[in-house]
Length: 335
Image (spheres, rainbow, N blue to C red):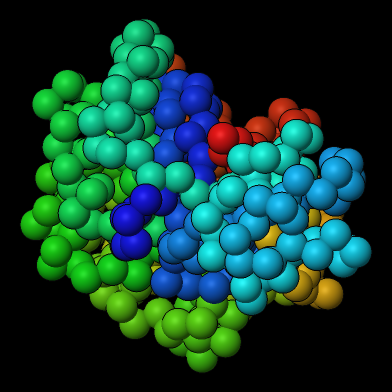
């Protein structure tokens, strides 16, 4: 692996909640934001990392012998001295129980495309395709453009999930013509709150959203995560409803809070925010917020909190919470 190459930490095959039909979702490492509620915290850094699952550790010591940096100390509860770890993955290669796992693998473009095309038949029969997520896929613009162009030449439907923090002119010129859908996250309306909770203000994000709606409104699907104590407040939802309404949207996708990221933070050595709940939001409270948001759209098409994809005259609901299932959680790629 060469430094600077885009890394992928998961490829979720046959995904049903990342766009229409059955899809392969490709998760890139690297994100310009640092949301503490992120359900993919392993995607924040661009470089490879080692995840440690202590309950799987056998205490064999093979990792200590394999590490060239002296970053393993078996007597430590966390085993890894992360300040020394370079993410080379040698410890994970020799770990017999997969207690140590490398997070982030480079795929040459053709290798990735070949892997994604294995499920072509599922895309065709279900009206599905490939979704690029992360992290933030647009951090790897050259690589992403090449993969998208190759998939388009194969007739594969493509979607992208983005935080919106990207150079919009480059996106419009190079990426937008190659995708069929753009799931665009809108988190916090207040710029000070956005900077405090994500590490960046939202001026670039809102500018990008405005430009994309002018260029290809039909491709853009706004999304808002319902995060307790962060985004899921009436003031924030009302302000975002007004913003979405002003851009001509009468509905959007409200995303259920996923606490799965809290446990992931621990295995990659990150601290866990003490004020974020470890369970799903109360259903009654969530429904109240969804109804409030719908009412705030004031006369526009009602947002029902789940996005309905029209397929041959029918609709498929993409809200597993309403079916009593847990939200989909990504997993670590294991070498």
